[in-house]
Length: 263
Image (cartoon, rainbow, N blue to C red; front, top):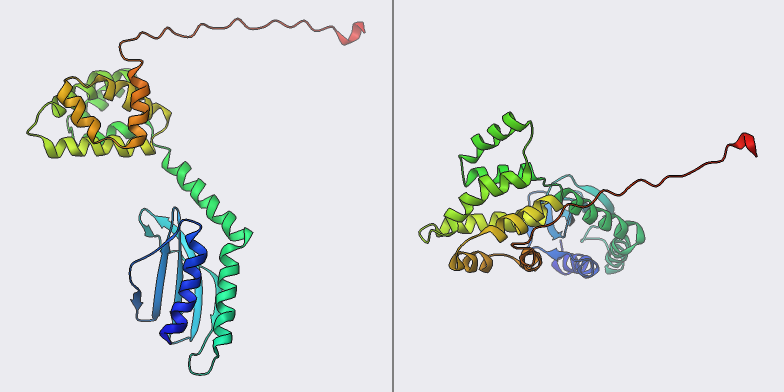
């Protein structure tokens, strides 16, 4: 494969995807079947593959699995190209087709749908999942979760966070010798805040962060929080020490309906 033609095709794909938030992986992935360049984005990946044996260019896509493509590739376009016999004009046709495919309304809509699906999937972390993630940091939490379920039939999220998890975090962050575990704890709070539902986010900011004791401990933890957590944490600080009255039940409105028979 002529390097100039390969770069022309992959370069055009890179230009088309840059505006959609994709990045080209460093270097070129070499495979036995040919040569490939990957473009990774939020929730989706694209690949330009040239197969030496089949003498063809393939533009394909798949979903992301974390930071890597999940490998379930779907072909979007395929063109035969023999560098020994085909002309630059034929290579230009491949460039135009790949660019049109990537920037067309159908494909850009698919990318947006993938991003939304990924965001929705990543925001399904509930309080029970949140507590289970801390078992790796505090192994005794596992037995306490089982005890909570045995006694109450479920986990009382706020109460369990305040009475069981918070004391452990307080003891940890106030121990200067536990730098590595403190960093792990802070990273968990960051990650779970981003992935968590509204209950998890409230537990992190109002119960955990608001409940950390010791000026030095508070400073150390805040220094390791990301911007999203800090923004909510500042708002939560306004509620610290305040008692929130339960919402009064509204009386149901009464409606009088005239019988249709009397009309």
